[in-house]
Image (cartoon, rainbow, N blue to C red; front, side):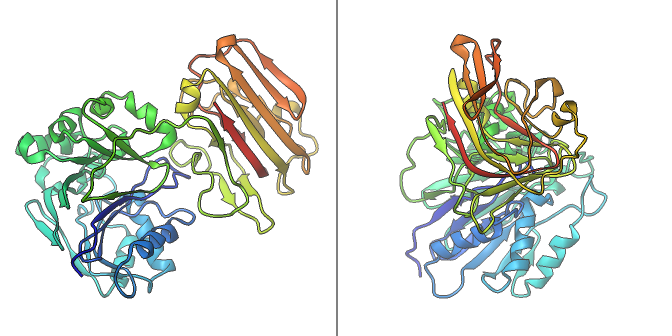
Length: 455
């Protein structure tokens, strides 16, 4: 089969226990697939990746992955593969597994993780290939030129394993794509010392290291892409745009389309024009908390792994609703992305539900302890920073329904917090730099029935 439309899919990432991860799927002209990385594999991510493969499969039988590239040995890039192989080993075929991780001791965290090595060993149908700079791979006309591996640094120290990322330039259909993995400044400088801007130029670019001090502004300007693929949570997108290293990415006279993996899957027809688009969501966002499908809260981020707090757990009981659990230690839940609250002069946030029986509140709990059990933090400009003075405690009574509504009007310098119809707090000093809304939890289990943001 040689007439299948080539597609590139940026896979939607969960960003639950950490604000990093990436996975990309390319469907080639013969109906096979090429994958780059695999996300962290949280919740139903492996199943979601398999769903995309099945939905895009134009061949008879199981999806055939002609090649699966892994950029480097961080779990937010390879662990989804491990979990997919564990849960659904017989539902896909892999012809080539391509990776080149530094030998143990070459840099902090180097070596091949045992769980990854075990998963690769079980794919007995796959040829395992170690790529080197200068190698070229061709999959039904989709080509990959290897521009950089960690070997290019010679004997120089590699203080950060991100700089061991595999960097490739892909040609697919009508577009060239630069894949940067998590490459940071050391790798960027090495690449710039070897290649000219003409050799680096690409139509599409994957932002390095999720935008967190990845790549370099000089490298991005040499690549000069018009289309940006950004594996970043939606709630951190605007923050990333403020970093000097990403200044090229916000120049709309050069970049005409940006796709963020923290929102939805994005599939590009690599033979057709790509329409200009930027992500700025406004209006009312009402979550569906009854379906139990993958990530119905697709605009939130539950995080802890990257900030030192305990990750929350999200489950969907058979009776419906969405159960959000924070146990044993402080859990910070980012419920609204920074962009919305940062640029909205007026907004309202509503959360409804009940406290579950799992909620642990000792009988002798005093009001001060309640602040460490359940609260809301919204009027604080620093991203994901814990400050008890900024937390407003919310009553935590087992079995009691709640319906909290926070309304902010920056133009009037005023905010109110209601428990149902009862006013429980009012503020007359509202920071113009208000960050996203954070839910603070400890030993709390909530069944949410409705979450609404309007702004």
